[in-house]
Figure 1 (cartoon, rainbow, N blue to C red):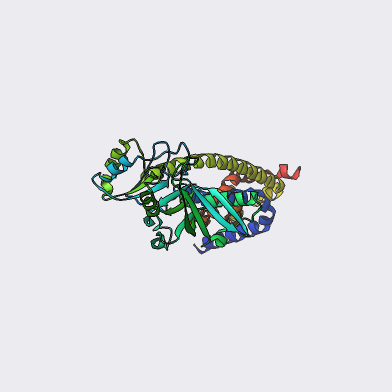
Figure 2 (cartoon, rainbow, N blue to C red):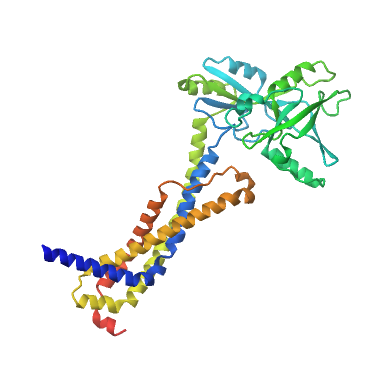
Length: 430
């Protein structure tokens, strides 16, 4: 027994010494694994970020018992615009929805139908532009704004500027020779809303100047205009309904976010609202669309990764064949002195596994560096992806090291068999 243990120990010692001696020569053989693992690490991070981004939130995040009701031609996540063909939810449908049994809180996005012009004074120059105006209740901001209770009308109307609108405004400012302004510069900035109660071009119309101030900015509101408290719009419409040629009722419903009392009743309530000719989306619908989008992303990514994997295996296989050819004399001598084929194969495969593990570690940290780089530069390269939150996925490091070690070992197995069958006489004839 003692002799057997001594024999095993000597074999391990000589095998490790052989691996250490040859590992530096073999490092270039599996170099492509670094790029494969780096791509895998980056892909897993992008996949999770895109999943959160696509299935991302409407005004924070939809709870399981919330549904979004939109006009039939518009989805919940689309930008709500204002124009001649703007879709709206008829007021009578809203009343019928409120009367449905099982519905709790109903929050609406309303659109002011009066023409409204935004007036700004900057650097001694004024900017005046017609801009759509929407109204929401403070409840919409509960999940995204700590100051949501302060979003109420007073002497000055608080205004939330969607990020999309800020980009449009900066483009207009640049066209007029004005400097582009960021959120910090415009926070709390005073402005004026010039509201006309009759349609543009009407022979008789009244105008009202309403002081306003920038309350904040939002990347989550799917709107193409300024956002004010909804009670300001409804109150203004009620106060000026008697104006000459006044547009009535002065506002329309663009979208509803409904809280269902009992989650189990959500499918039935959704069917009732759909029967009114409206579009209904819930968290389940968003999850289904997210999964469908991810399936497309996963499919295309797996094809690319499969091609990359195949090319990497072929490259590693060819590299190890070259190593076997260059070390044929050594393998032949090992066979002559009595080293078994199994030991040569195991040593060669283990050597490849160690090299693969090292490159897997390097590939993981290369991918992590790429994630950090993209995290800081994606918002500048692609502004629409500013909300994409990249980060390392947990548990990827051991998977990366294990996968790369396995890949390198498998690629080296057939060359290892060739090495174990080396003939001394053929090796000497080289």
